Length: 116
Image (cartoon, rainbow, N blue to C red):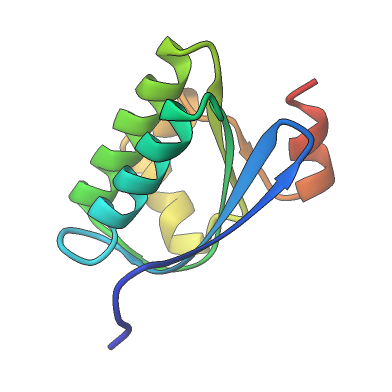
């Protein structure tokens, strides 16, 4: 079992890339991601790219925080995009029809270009 979600952060221009590692689910990662995204929004950093290659689990709470933070960033003139979804996460995004809401990328350079 993995511990609480870990977030590594780096910036490329005005885009903040958050690399998520662990479980994005109730009590493990949803609050960690929500709190960090809220801090970034408060700082005016509203262009987020979430690298989800190392997300080991995603549940409804995790999906909820993704949607919530997407709305937070959009309302502040930014956006939240997803990078490197696992097969399982990709399937969940498809089932929930969230693939029609989020921009999803497999290549970081392509994702970064999309913010221009």
